[in-house]
Image (spheres, helix red, strand yellow):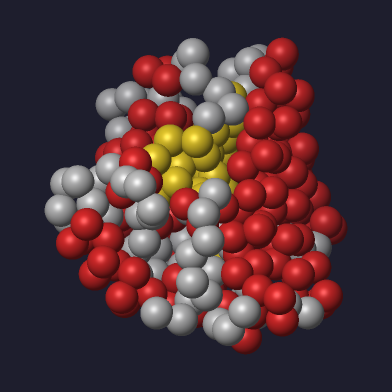
Length: 256
């Protein structure tokens, strides 16, 4: 029960196949009390249907592209939970058209939207959450992908946004470290989720990963959930500003 008595805010649960769901399950099984968010009414139905499996968490609406909604979320969390011990940022978005063809064809609007939702939102929610972690230490975990470091076909502007996200992890770790708050990222192998389905060729990416990764298996959501549990718990108290790969060793191969 590594998180017994702890409260955590998880952003990004879309359905029971999402990485955020796997992390939320791992945290709940370790004793945490959870606060979940949903973006809109359609997502709210999905989250409310799943909520009982997580011990009836507190639910709030929040579109991370809207600063007013982030402020309202943090005020609501403070009112209902008092504070939080960890934050999971597990969301990203790019227009579907920007995730096929060439990166050179990325429009200004697609670039702006992708970087705002997928990278800047970490900065915005970390800023809002930091006061709620006062005198509690705290751990912030976000999700990235090897496309931030290497060219992955069709990943395009999302790869650029993940590179910005990883840089943000390092800068936030430096800013928030004096408050006892750690900031890390998990770089997971390709997993079929609602978000990744927008990437053209995701099925082939998953298949190739399972064939070539040193562990010869596709990355499972539960593996990411367990690593997140480690990063959220006191066991990782000396780790911040890092990107932890959970990909069966795929990222270590030459040419990946």
